[in-house]
Amino acid sequence: MSPSHEPATIYDLLTAMAPGRVMVELADGSARLTYGEVRERADALAGWLGERGVKPSDRIVIQVRKGFEEVICTFACARLGAVFINVHPQWKPSQLRYVLAHAGAQVAFVDPMLAADLVDEVDLVVSVGDRKPSSGASYADALAAGGQPPPAIQDPGALATLLYTSGSTGSPKGVMHSHRSLVQFATNVSAYLGNAEDDRVLGVLPLSFGYGLSQLLTMAKVGGTLVLERSPFAADIFVSLVDQRITGLAGVASFWAQMLGVLEESPRELPALRYITNAGGKLPVPLARRLHAAMPDTKLIVMYGSTESLRTTYVPPAESERKAGAIGWPIPGVEAFVITDDGRLAGPGEQGEIIHVGDHMMMGYWNDPEATQRKLRPCPALADRIGDEPALYTEDLARIDEDGCFWFLSRASWMVKSEGFRFSLTEVEEAVERTGLVGQAIAFASEDPDHGQVVDIIVTAGNSGAPDPVTLLRTLRRAVPRYMVPRKVHLWAGTLPHTVHGKLDRQAALRALGFVH
Image (cartoon, rainbow, N blue to C red; front, side, top):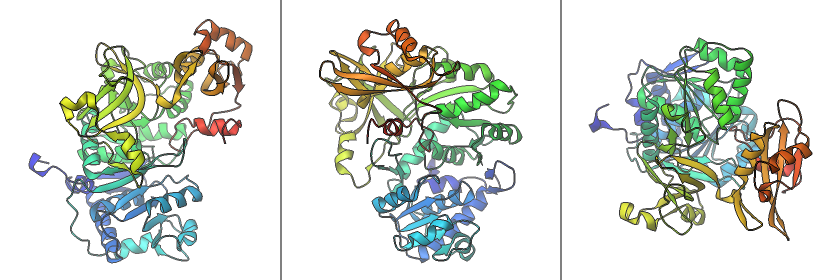
């Protein structure tokens, strides 16, 4: 695509590519669609929706099994200027209803089993699946009937999607991103990943997750292929990596732990796999080193971002050993800074909040101007650079080293003050995990009349079984200051809970143990 024809919307990403190139296929090799076929089906569906009164800015919820239908629905919405809202298939009906009501959705693409229950709640319900719906419309019939779509929208500033947060720390928020934001996101990420048209990325993550959506958009930006993986099992994923000649794979820390469990037990060659990436939460240094050892010919790229920023920093593969544990440098198209508590630009070693400036910031939170104003506001310390333009306050704490590399410290909400000392729950968790006596750890704080706050720790069994709390605490007393030593150890049987996107669900663990309600 020439510079004079830069894409205005994510639909333009689709139309810029040679129609005969394969865009998406199933990991089992049973079916594939070219860019031309995806465009043809998206146009037909957009026409059908338009003839039923769907207009630009209408909200459309998509909760379907991973497959071609979700991709086609997404691009049909983009052509119309409707707002697509991908909802994870594992979200419960109550969560789906929350999103439908909160977004004021006009259309819902859902499993036929849900369709009958939603016909009174949404203007148009479309069933996606083999079973014929008892009410509402059928996706297959809609696609077959088609319709003449209106001209594709060309406003890059138009709202494209609402990405709903997991809601693990409160009600889910609808994070608004424009077409410009998503196109720039795809452009910037594909640049530092070095993506090209011969890339074949395995889509393990869902499109409801910003990290998962990036797999689709980056491939569309360069003309690559997204291979949709439906199996959650590591053994099946390894088969797909080999059989489908996968060049790129994205995951979160819990995913990599599962993959390593199989790979270390049964080593195998992955000749096509050029890179793997981690985001959606910190990758522990021991886990990163195991990945390097198990896949020495594959580049590991650690990344940091949020639903609100999509992506902010990354660690280039050449620096992954020297900067183990860091979150890296700002990605192309983005500026990031650390601002101290007193409003200054932080110097090397100083702690402060990460401020994101530039491409692919969110437009705000849907129907929540108060929360939007807290997160998007001018930054006086950056006035000479951006004037009164809003910056994104991430509420994440970090420091920058002498090389300008960012090191994540904590969420601001995870900071604790005990006996007059301020520290992060993350620091406690990392110290506990470094003992080698536990698997995973979750630290939490409670108020204490004598100390201000005190910390408890929830731990899972390590390689040698469940830890002895007395031994664990004795080991910690030799490793950290007294005020950081947990008051009590709580043993958790099995695996700690995770969100549907694979992130550690702290709130669910605390609820299960009765510490929050």
